[in-house]
Image 1 (cartoon, helix red, strand yellow):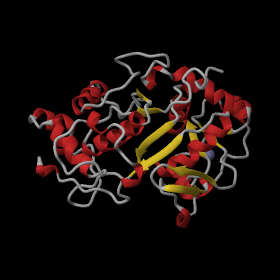
Image 2 (image 1 turned 90 degrees about the horizontal axis):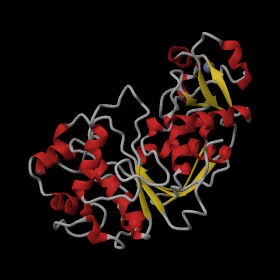
Image 3 (image 1 turned 180 degrees about the horizontal axis):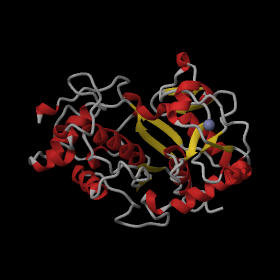
Image 4 (image 1 turned 120 degrees about the horizontal axis):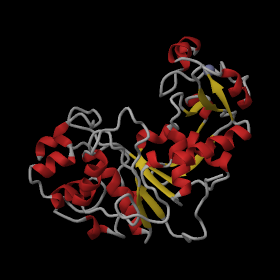
Length: 324
Ligand SMILES: [Zn+2]
């Protein structure tokens, strides 16, 4: 299959990544998570890969990938491999890697780890027992789990998604920021979609295939993805890939106590850049929320080797865009 793990050639060093989705412009919350991911990799003397996660075609907006890279460079973050600089693991845009996801799905089919699911959203909603709804909607009730991957040929003309069999048992990891976490994938989402009915890979499949294929061994990201990690660990196991270190950082809240959202233009990096905000002031403010400095202007490169994961506050930081 076309999915390979770079290990010997990339050596034992840390390989981190920044993986923006070009769906609506990066904001202060993204900046903080990316700053931490960058400092973790650079602090270990490691490499940084930039990958554009654009497989959700319905949400992707033109020009946003370029804007995200502009925003990140404006902040002072850089990368060794990416769409604009190339590298040995390209292409670095997910929509150009569909053959790899197809190969990976094929491997899961041959292992009978996936089955075709013809359920509609409404059917799953009705069949799932309401009290056990997972964080991401109802837990899949297993309606189609009696099918084999080979039943695909008998479903001609019907729309179906490919679901991964999660089986039973706890999955755990030692989170770089949150310590040991254990979770039962069957109680989070149940059998989950790896291949969507429109033919696109799911986020869960694409992120695992790409991180493994690019030799990423340290994944630092927002803690809204904690519930996805057990599913991704199951995929690592199914493919025989060594999982990366995972670290999940709390998402930034606005003054109203709600998560910053892409719809809020006031907190977008491109807006702040357009207003002439000094990125060093922004980095200084973000630094204070991660245990670096007292808010004085700074560049990310000033802090390489100084960020201590243990000093990251466990709670979600509050940032007021009005302060800018
Ligand atoms: Zn089904």
